[in-house]
Image 1 (cartoon, rainbow, N blue to C red):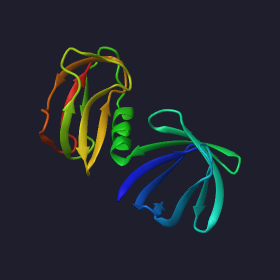
Image 2: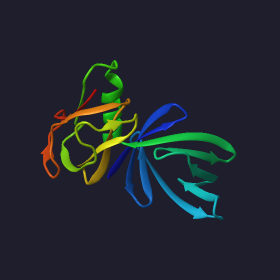
Image 3: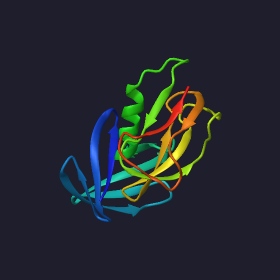
Amino acid sequence: MNEFVVRLNGSIKLVRLIDEKSIEVENVKYNYSFIKLNDSRHLLKLNNKFYETSFWKNSEEELSVQINNENLIVNIKTTLQEKAFQLISSSHITKDQVSIIKSPMPGLVLKILKKAGDNVSKGETVMILEAMKMENEIKVSNDGKVVDIFVSEGKPVEKYISLFSIK
């Protein structure tokens, strides 16, 4: 099962994709299907009720959704991305402090995109970690410079292991 953390107009829900026809939201199972009406409109069948929907992508993680003429902003992250976001958000860093970015869960370092000395911008991906058969981008939470990389591509990492540092 694939797990996601979904922010829907500010409220947070844990969503699990069970299969092609069912999902679980906060431990409640729903059967669903989509019927394409045209390029921008779909009919969502959710537990035998129908909803007219339109959606468009605002960014990598955010969608605008219209369901029966109600507009919603939906932010979707994998559980690993959410854990990384929480870890990074909880660290308060000043300009001259060095921040150590740690692995939010066990996984395999698939690709390192930056090297020591590289400048990075807020939201930029430094490396890709594979966990639970999913690729997860490890991003920086603020502008800075990569001070050091503590791991190597192709090597496994445990939860809370230091991955890299930023100043």
